[in-house]
Length: 497
Image (cartoon, rainbow, N blue to C red; front, side):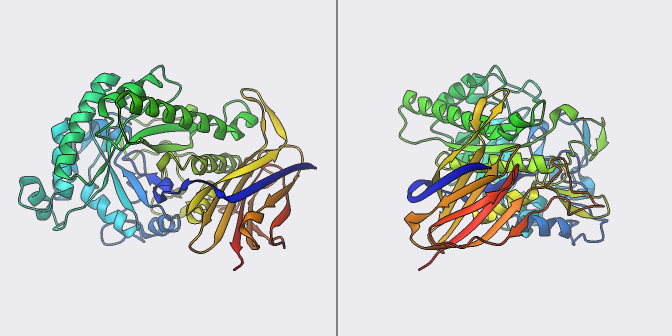
């Protein structure tokens, strides 16, 4: 049996955890919107056509903010196509996903959906084919109270009160050669700066996210981030990061994707700090990791010029859920810089929630770790001092076989410890040392594991991959638990007063 130990001291605080760390993403892509969140003919559709079965599962995830409407889609999107009477809205070709967009859902409807889902909107403006003035008009439509053309048009369209959207993305992945209207770093930086100026003139209370490098695999990384921030540092509040992982050639590499994710975050933070020094700024740039997930990009299939084609509908396995848990730990461990993140995406498209058109809804394997960390990973992020044996990976060499993260909520005295055990051959005797908290009680131990790493939830077998609750270990300060090989764990404790 292997051995590992984790010591957690309540004085070793990384940062307060911003609830927006557990955001998500709905793009006009595939079936994310149509037959995802919106299906007027469904038996459980509400008066606006939103699927209530999907809304119930979204609310269970406690998602605080949802990015919309893209993504690659936004770089060719006319937001005005999605307002006004639905039967008068135009159908358009979507260049990003080679689809036909009917525009039955737009910003007004999405704001309504977010209210029903108990979440907020993170809106994106088009800086591909769009202009800074277009971005200003959208801001005016959404956030200005009344008395102007665009604000009065919103009122005419049925929304008397402003939408009051407080978080906005200045375009999407503008360094990507796949992006409609892709730009050089300097050209994008200038365009984003001018859009930001207009948007903050209209509503000074908003926070803005500029586009960072689309991927660390592009030649533009990380020079893109430096140049963009030197143009926009005082106008924006976040720089974005996007990263996806897939099981390409090695389970060991895939399991330890969290290491690459951590290095990516630290490089972007360092680049932002350089821009801070270069611009003589007094503020520290926050990071919005507003696209992350497991995504089998190599298996992507397209269905050109269909409405809501069934694309990017990855079916997630136990192995995917383990990797996903490790990435959640990385976000928590970087809570000092990553203040917002968006799981991409939320429904049907590389998503934790999957629907049948006209039928059932399913929780995918990745739903569970996301729900657990979103629910319990609140308060303060704590530094975990973990010692574990190593596993050998083809790309990273010998790396620790365990990824850990912890949170402490001093309001209710709860401690949550999250553990990914990457050990592939043996179980691990694991010690959790919480003596700095005084006496504590373990109240929950949830485990996600199983004999088949590639088991998946399906409509025929919806409970193939679900967490199981173990009997909590008795103790007061130090706890010893045997962790099965290749497993994800959530431990819950309360301080005894």
